[in-house]
Structure formats: C-alpha cells, structure tokens
Image (tube, rainbow, N blue to C red; front, side, top):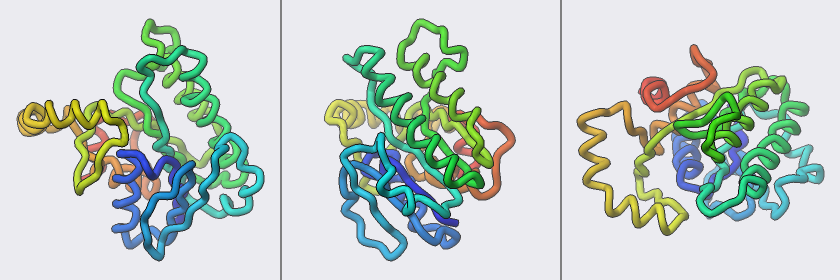
Amino acid sequence: MRVILFGATGMVGRGVLRECLLDPGIETVLCVGRRAIGTSDAKVREIVTEDLTDLTGVEGDLRGFDAGFYCLGVSSAGMREEEYQRITYDLTISVAERLSRINPGMTFVYVSGAGTDSTERGRSMWARVKGRTENALLRMPFRAAYMFRPGVIRALHGIRSRSRVYRVLYAVLFPFVVLVATAAPNSITTTERVGRAMIRVARDGAPTRILGTREINRLAR
C-alpha cells in the first residue's frame, strides 16, 4: 500500500508515520507539509511546500497512492470563525478535491475530533466547522472516506505535541490520564492506536464512516 500523509510533524501525524514505517504492508509514505519531518527511512518521500493550497506543481508526485491520511489541524482557541475555517475547511477541502480527482481509488482518512457537529448548526464554532469539513469529505468521490473523532489522545514512544500549552497540560494531567485509561479504556486512545486504526481502515474498511475513540481502539487491536 502507498500512503500520502499530511501533517507528519504534528503529534498525531508523527504517531501515524511511526506505524506506517513499522507496517510491512506499506511500501511508500509520501509526507506533505510545510516543514521537513527529520526522519530518514527508505520508505519515506517528502514534499515540503509553504503553500499547501496550491499543489499544482507537484501534482504528478501525488498520483498512484492508495490511501490519504490527513492529520493537519490547529486549535480554535483565540481564532475567529473565518480564520479557523480557512485552515480547517478551505485547506482540507482543497487538498482532498485534488487527491480525489487524481486518485479516485484512494481511501481518505481525516482526523477530526470528538464532539464534531454533523448538523453544522450548533453553538460551538469549531464543532460546526469540523462538521462542515467532514460532510464535504464524505460527499467526495473517493473509494471510501472515514472520519476519525478521537477524544483524548495519549502520546507514546517519545512523541510530543508541538503546542507548548498542550505539553504543559499533558504533564500536569498525566496521572489522571493514566487513571482514566485504566478505568475506562475506551475514553482515551493513543498515537499508536490512531495510526494502526488508520492503516486498518485504509486496508480493510470499517462498518461505519465516522469512528469515535471506542471504534478506533477496536480497529487498532
């Protein structure tokens, strides 16, 4: 299987990349982003570009892939809806429309979030925008598209969030996270499980197109 990965420098993306490199069934991972990933592996290819909204110049390099894993995203904290939509909706849809056109047999997996609003009419700005993004992706002519809605994600194998706020929160709340993971294992997932589950749905599909933490953990087993 040949995979395109967007967002490989983020916490979730690094976890997905790790699992792709460990999986013997994955032949190539093309990482597309604004920064180099700093990983040397025979499976890895990279496209580093400042403008992800226009991939015309590298379109030929994006052909012939079986799966697209989209792990790009930002926190909505302090952002106006127009700004958040530009990054969360406009950029994602621009990338996905191009991939669906040149790789119609591709399975596309989008990392969304628990609480996403599929009605697009709720009070929460980020949930509306995420819901709008999911709905647009589900209408695209991919072979299949899956929306991952994890809640709390525990970073493993030395992976850390690039956000200082998240790193501090994680350090403070780590004992609580471990306790909850033990008492209620389906309320928390990990970077490892997210990566494994994404590979699983790309390879074998899943019963539903919107997958929460429980389903992610089950697929990762």
